[in-house]
Length: 294
Ligand code: GLU
Image (cartoon, rainbow, N blue to C red):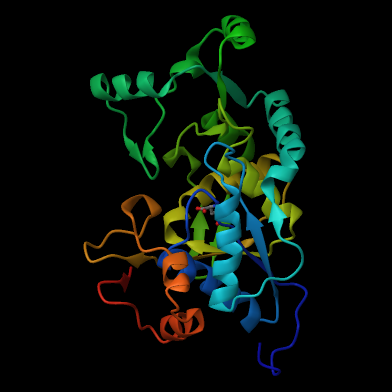
């Protein structure tokens, strides 16, 4: 931070990676944007490890994240936060939404959903086909009985929730004033069958708990904000300002992804490249060959 920037306790930003793989160049860019956003305003930069999915989380990925960020020269304030240490608070919030009658158990398996999509295709949402609402229509007594013995997740009844909150607004510093459209994602899962909480609920609760004033993250999560804004309204949580930044794309114009084998930061780090130099280039709009900004 340059000495001319005044500290401003009213700005708190976070980087919130999921330790289910190695970070790649897209993460380096995302971490840098969030870090620089905070530092340029004299704010704090927090690191939150989103390790709620115990099947996919691995300790070596957590270690690699910390090493990669240090290699990039991105220092965070305070202790690293781990979502896995906060499971009780997620369960309490889910209970509150259940008491409000806004969650319903969902027994659909992935294969049920695939079959349904084949025979009765549902409109595509930002994160895949919108849930058809099969379990929303179950008789409540039957659903309760089944829930006692059958594996199930919990979905939010978005139409019912919107009827309570009415229209909701939020501000994106890059994209301008926004009206929330949670119906575009449909009845998303908030408590999955096999993990204690889903991303949407955990991230919304934690952004409040960590005092995040500005949520700085990639455009790929823009639509998720519709659900986060809805949950804030339902659970009486404050709404931070958002800043959804552009994404790094590969030569095919696709977002870099762990699953597509994009080069990991660890490989570059262990090969002796300079993380500082990489970010110096990013800050000047210079990207490796084949990589561009969306
Ligand atoms: N943990 C999420 C991810 O790695 C990001 C959460 C967020 O920034 O809201 O994609």
